[in-house]
Length: 265
Image 1 (cartoon, rainbow, N blue to C red):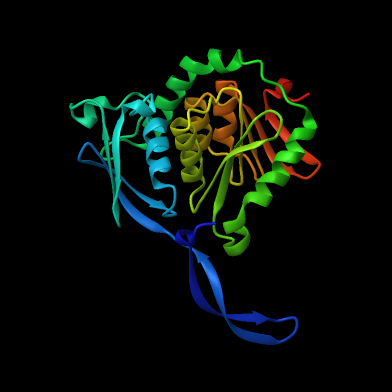
Image 2 (cartoon, rainbow, N blue to C red):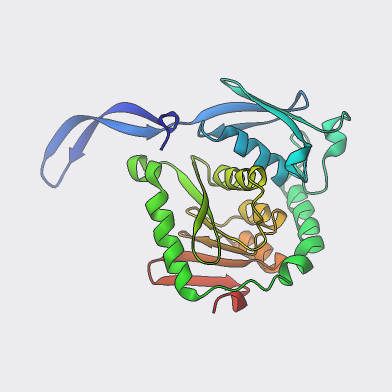
């Protein structure tokens, strides 16, 4: 756990059962506000845990479709309240936005969703043909490992976790962030930096399985995603379309498989 992820705060703790109150120091997860620039263009403003910011930047660029390889990233500069990424190509970023990307000024959510669906249809055959399978007992092991790794969450209760595992249940990459999507971008960015193949791995997360989170996994060709929490309807629809096996409520010996259950033996 990094000290950059926590801040101490004084709190008055009440216990109604025992009728007590106690002044104490508690540890709180940090939210950092960062303007994110791509080739000197302001692309978005992100709320992030100020840790693994280079990894987040590269993962976010990849998830947004602005890069297809870490080799396209020339540099990432981390400042106190901004992140500056330089990627290959000198043309205007607005013209580089692929059909999967976002438009910050005039695009509505439905347009972004349609672009994501169009992209997923293009890659679904590749993910569907992935013959990765795992024993059902591995799911229990992953949920236990993810909980054990979530040190900042156990201290603060204020972060989300994401982790990459191989099919034997070995933890390869782990990230935490105040945002569940940010944690996934950090894992994807780390995997790109470390040149870890993703199409034979499992992503485990603590947060809800939303459309945006599932899309990030489709973009990275991750075939199996497990969460300690619940799926959302559009996340399920996108996972079904993409060929991704989606598992929710993975807690101990119990879990639900919502899409493409053939990968669980």
